[in-house]
Image (tube, rainbow, N blue to C red):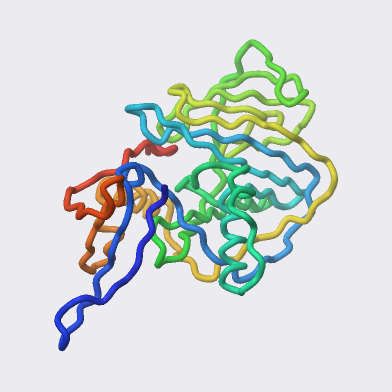
Length: 296
C-alpha cells in the first residue's frame, strides 16, 4: 500500500496551525514510491528506428532481497533516443486525466506495466549528436513536481568476454564494465549496430539487450523489439525542479535516511499508521532501505 499525505488545520478555535498528516502502513514505511506528476505539454523531437521494451527489476531491500519491477520503453531515432518507465508514464497520464476531468485509465491497466515507481528516473532523453542526457525523476512526496538534471553521456570502458547468449531472438556477446560503484555484465548484439543500451549503459559495438549488476540487485532484459517508426516526444512536466546530478543523489539518499524531514518540508508532521488495529499514532523514527543504482 502506498503512502498518502493530506494537509489539515488543527488547533484552538481562535488559532490554527498548518500541519502535514502522513498516513501509511508498516509496509509502506519501508518502501520508496515515486509520485506521479502532471504533463504540461509534449514536444516532438524525432521518429524512432527501433522501439525496445525491457523488463527492469531492482532490489529495494538488500536485507530481505525484496524485488520490484517495471517495463521500460526505449525509442531510438537518428538524433534522439528516449527511455520511459511505462508504469510511471501511465500513472502520470491518469493524473493528467483526473486534473482535467477526463476519463482515467483503470489502475489494473497500469499494474500490468510494473508494481513500483523507481526513484532514479521516470524519463530519459538523449541528444545523440550533442551526447547530452536529460533525466527526469519522480519526487517522493505529493506536493512537489519531479526533479530534472542534465549530464553528458557517460563514457564507459568495457572488457569484452567470451561466450554468447540469445536474447529476444538475437545472438548476444558478453562484456563487463565498472560504472559508478557497480560491476555490470551486458549482452549486446552486433546484428543491431547501435552503441546504446538500457539506463546509462552504452558504448559497445551493438545494442545492449540484457544487463545485470554483479550483486543481482539490478537487471534489464529486452522482451520485445519493434521496427515500425513511432514519434519520439519530450514530455514537459507542469512544474519541475532543476538540479544537478549530485544534488539529486543527495536528495535521494536524504529521503531514505530521513523521510520525515523531506516530507515535512519545514512544517510539523503528524504520522499515523493504518494497520489491522486501525489508525494509531506512529512516533518512531524510520528509515527506508537504501540500495541505489548509482553508488558513487
